[in-house]
Length: 130
Image (tube, rainbow, N blue to C red; front, top):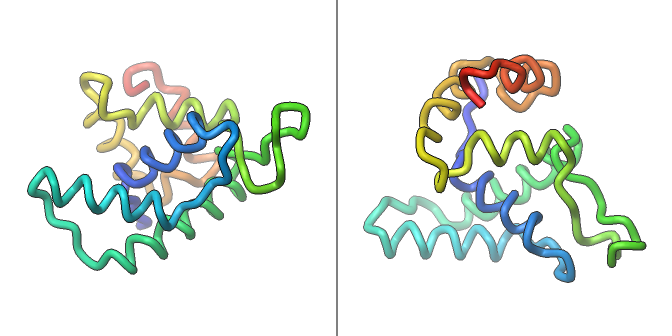
């Protein structure tokens, strides 16, 4: 069973969503995420491992169609991204600013690989979790 750091994935998706004119840099985002965890008194763990995981998530999100290269017509330079429809679905499911976000995360965690394209499509289609 594959487990994901939903808080880190949420952070990365928000950076994609808000980073139109910026290169996507997962390692610094992971450092910022770790600093926020520490400031909130939460355990941080190995920051280097967190940075590596952020890079792995970037590749996974790209390969599985949650993000894609930003079109040149929108300021794309090959190093920045946009959310796809699937990515928008994912961020709406796991967004911690939305009340009840814990339930969709729990349902995702119960899947063998929640970010597998077919699995995610099935889970996201269920109205009671989205």
